[in-house]
Amino acid sequence: MNPHGSTLPIFLGVTEHAARRLVAWDLIGLTRTLALPYFPQTLAGLKVVLAIPHRWFANKVDVSFTLRFVDLRNSGNTAWLAGSIRNMAWEAAGGEVVHVPRFLEVPQSSAEGQDLLMSIGGTEEATDVMIFPAPPLNLPAPTDIRVDLEIDGVAHPIGSMSTVFVQPPPISDSERKALMAMPKRPGILMFGIGCPICKERKKYFLTLQPDDERIRELSVESSPLLDAPDDWVCSCGTRNSLVWLKQGAHDLFRRPPGPGTSSAISSFIPLYQSGKIEELLEQYSRLIHAAPPEEDVQKFLEQNPVFWGFLSPSRILSKPAVLTKKRADFGVVSSTHVLYLIELEKPTTALLTKKGKISAEIQAGADQIRDWELVVQDHRSAFLSELGLDPSKIHEVRYVLVGGLARSVKPSGLAKLRHDPFGSKTQFFCFDELAAFLRLIQGHLNDWWRQPEPPGADPDSD
Image 1 (cartoon, rainbow, N blue to C red):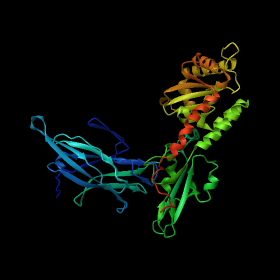
Image 2: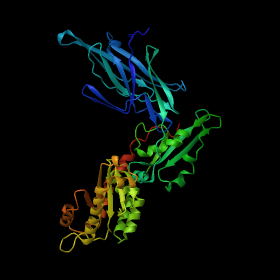
Image 3: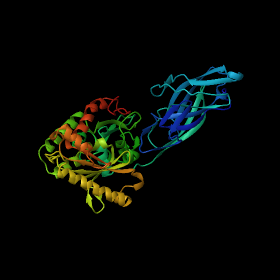
Image 4: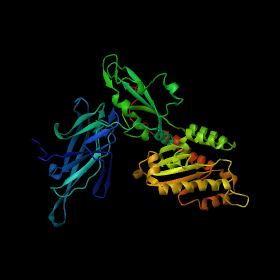
């Protein structure tokens, strides 16, 4: 018999994000079927949601419990978290006894202890929704999980959940360029796998750029993940599947490393560090001040899409066609679903005439953009479809004109260019201003990469 009453808490599921709004909760993505793009994986970083009836702890000062997740494919694979609830009661207006349960703490767990969140209650017949960190169960493969609540040494099943593999889409060339435009991204992921019995270990790596010059150094002690066997078998015969990692690990490039990223990662190498940004800025400065042809500038920006990072790209297109009229130099789809068509003039282009009017070259670029704008207005769906973009997912088309150097004119002349009518949807930048955007990021990179690495021990460490 359950000494705490016949009505036990109910496991409602797990969620990535939970926020308290006064006496209510906003739960984003609450589920009992967790779709994951790769394995091994961990539940660390998720939130557990329980519905707890007030009758369960009525007439008790404290209720201590252990929440345990059990891998049904391997019952020896468990994770737990211990906590307690204090039942505070007083007489409200009208003589009603009001119970307010609150979590006191997580005194111990199979990971680092974390404070549990408070939930405000009502009458004894009410049910509270309570939210706290998930036990950090490691998942080597898709599985079903039983959720137990242990009270006084007795385990009570209160629910279950499943984890399933959903293969993420491959990274296209346009998405790869967009990822390379975001400095706070890993460039190389390192995966460590080992046998706890014979201690044999193996390292694999996955790169965002296939031609990354650092691959040569990595290959001395590691192997490319995509060349790995589907099953890694150590000398004592222990088998570890790499199938899900090979099919889905590239999804890790789509988000910055952080807590709960994946237990599969042993380490990562940043895509950019401050020194690399400094080297790019020096190369770019030499280029734009050397009177280069427009094609050389186009090629440099194509090879180094980080210069478009200020537009928060999700895709970067090279030479996108504006139907049959002409081609833009670049197309950038932002994370806010805005498509930017970019026209480049030469860095040596004069910005203003001697009389202070917009130069013929800059005006020609503005006229070119006006032609594009008319095409987009008249044939929007056809234009976007030709680029392989879903018209319903592009909220707006805007334009960027880049030409000349800001240092070549006085501040008053630059202000005139800012205010002259290029059109309400057109932004104008000089080439040296693109470098200024990148330099703003450079100073933050060293601090960023000093943050803790993603969870997961290096296979060479004890």
